Length: 145
Image 1 (cartoon, one colour):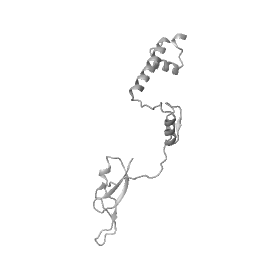
Image 2 (image 1 turned 180 degrees about the horizontal axis):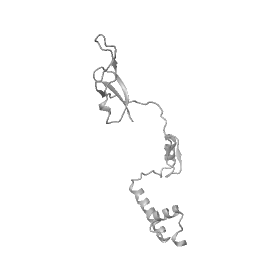
Image 3 (image 1 turned 60 degrees about the vertical axis):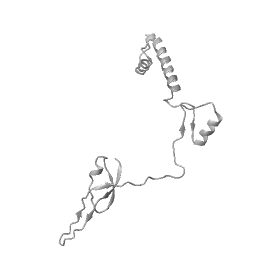
């Protein structure tokens, strides 16, 4: 659950509360104070509603730990730093990394899937997925039966 910094609308006491997002506006102040009337020795709970305190964003300076840049599926290697990645780009000017939504990638992916489906049909399966499931179950290929 997220932690919210909340402030009492009456006494101004700030507190951190871990609660569901739907419950954050239904919190009551739990600050205790002494009653002004003589004879009452029991502390009284404030009980006023709490409001969410908006705090400024935290700015990080300097180097931050991050995962290595992983292009192992497309390029066959990982880069530990951005400098290594930029050097590889300078050394390989004709290469480019494309996203999964790039039309060129989509066309190549679909062509490869169609080729796998054709191969699976020649082997007696309905499509490549049926072949994969059959192999996972340990069944023999239709051409071997």
